[in-house]
Length: 329
Ligand code: CUA
Image (tube, rainbow, N blue to C red):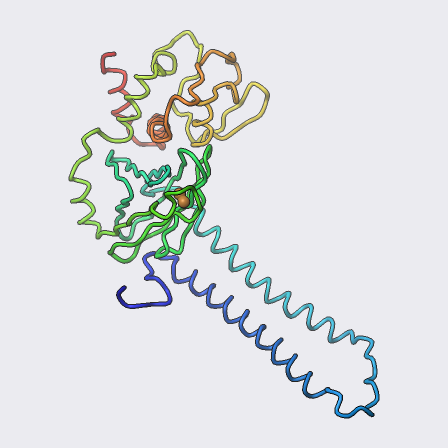
């Protein structure tokens, strides 16, 4: 079993603060419990009825200062817990906007399937470089799972039909356990794996091992061809469907007047159920419904491809987009 330690090793920038909050909760909770039990014991002995002739004690009818003290005191302590917890929550679940390493993870009974932007794919293995902001985009193929890495002090439920995101910055090279922390069927206890944190140079070497199938953008571009999206969304000049160039990450006006953000969830929904949110000026029922036809991993590839059609300002146009148009069908 190796050396027993109360805390699992810490492998990310934020892990120490989670432990600090945990220790704070433990100390405050423990102190409160001891205070209450000690008081109960002390008062029971101190004010016990010493003989049958003892008169009944006088009733006390409250004391305003006392009431205020034991209401406001704990309230302030709770506010510290609340404030600290909220700060940590937003810290861990709000990825930096720029320069994250995005890794896509699909939970499936009973494994974690990992896709890297560069095209590598793994099962129950996650490789990340030290000192880089890593953003995980989590999807589920079937039921609710929960992606849990104790060494990061991070856990996130993975709910089918939507994407969940969290981020971390690994600090210590090593191998760390991944678990599924939501009961998801008979294979739940086997649904785990390992996260390997590598030094940046080792990571480069690992990536150089190659992916075989091309980058995620290229894989998405292939699907874009295969499902015929390309015929309308890129080459169509009749205006039947909206162009996908420079759409991702920007607001879209819908035909019912609403404005939504073109994020991962929006693109996903628009593929699976195009009539849910139709762009202003376009007709319903033009695009086929892909519900049940594309798996979560394929959807992620398509989303990464659509994302690549909206490069951040001042970066050159994407080679893969033109590759998709070039390659013969
Ligand atoms: Cu997946 Cu438990």
